[in-house]
Image 1 (tube, helix red, strand yellow):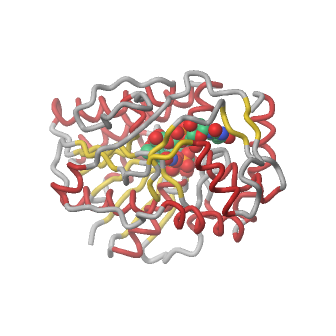
Image 2 (cartoon, helix red, strand yellow):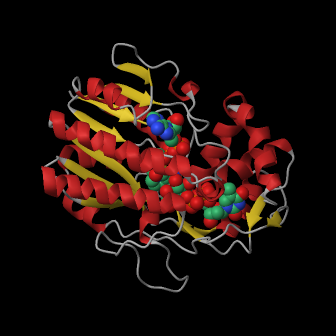
Image 3 (cartoon, protein in one colour):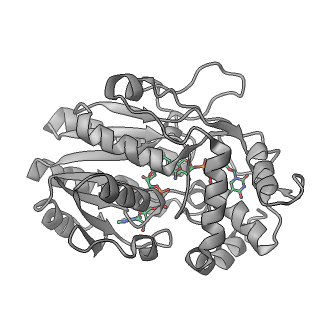
Amino acid sequence: MARLLVTGGAGFIGSNFVHHALAHTDHHITVLDKLTYAGNAASLEGLDPSRFRFVHGDIVDAALVDELFADVDAVVHYAAESHNDNSLHDPRPFLDTNIVGTYTLLEAARRHGTRLHHISTDEVYGDLELDDPARFTETTPYNPSSPYSSTKAGSDLLVRAWVRSFGVAATISNCSNNYGPYQHVEKFIPRQVTNVLRGIRPKLYGAGENVRDWIHAEDHSAAVLTILDKGEIGETYLIGADGEKNNKEVVELILELMGEPADAYDHVTDRAGHDLRYAIDSTKLRSELGWTPAYQDFEAGLAATIEWYRDNESWWAPAKDATEAFYASKGQ
Ligand code: NAD
Ligand code: DAU
């Protein structure tokens, strides 16, 4: 049994990790979350209070972070500003949380000798051409495109520097696009699913040729537990499930699974600087640490995710109108 501190545990992937770790280990978990617009306490309702506690606070708050690090064996750091479109509108919170927040955690890890796992993204590597046979690996040079991905890249480099210069016991993982329950309606798949549920046509940026490499959040959680258990300090592991699909294919599949005509969507203004394609080669994680994804069938995983949104309107409805009003103001 270990005592884990999970930052950003009220967000999409963090809350999936908390549910997964409580179900598959005997760890005790403390979540530290600021409950920004992206955090939702309802995602953590009903958890066993003898193994779970929630702390409302900011990872930039050094005194609070120091106090929490004193009582845990390891930290899994999910907290971030995570949405590319928001980073184009207002980059500042991305610098505060992704850069200064990660710095604050690293300094606490250094003081307390705490094991830290830093959650990052494949977007740090930039993008690939559609016909490029290569995929991202742990040695691909960093080349981020957006304020979001550049602050994530900066946070990764801070972790690497704190490992090398101060001996902090950290690992990093860079994962591809996640889907599953508890994802905010600003993101692609929940936005389109909840649009259809509301009778609004899905919105596709540009021509919809951009490719994302989809992985179920449950598989991401299992990979992180594997790295915490068996990962080598100082190493980076890429997490992906060979799920490349272009956005047009995904929208058409959502419409088909929801009983609508496959062409019942609108093309809207493209995202500035829109990355064309991400693709992960997760050979290192699979061969060195023995992880394999359980969700191999994207259509089945997507159908289950659609059902979750159908059954949990009270979870997503409070954020839906404001999210659509913001997109409408940008022509998206
Ligand atoms: P999210 O936006 O759904 O959740 C982020 C959480 O962090 C929220 O609960 C929010 O309240 C909290 N938070 C934000 N700023 C904070 C602060 N200063 N202090 C404390 N808490 C704060 O994000 P997500 O999609 O779950 O992503 C989680 C992590 O995984 C991020 O680091 C992201 O870069 C990474 N990631 C995401 C994906 C993806 O597909 N969503 C893929 C790869 C990596
Ligand atoms: O690759 C990992 C990254 O995946 C994470 O680091 C980010 O935190 C996460 O948000 C996600 O980034 P993307 O920008 O790829 O995700 P998003 O859901 O915003 O968009 C997915 C694709 O769908 C992208 O090509 C843009 C497109 N899109 C998005 C929205 C919201 C649309 O076509 N229409 C939309 O309405």
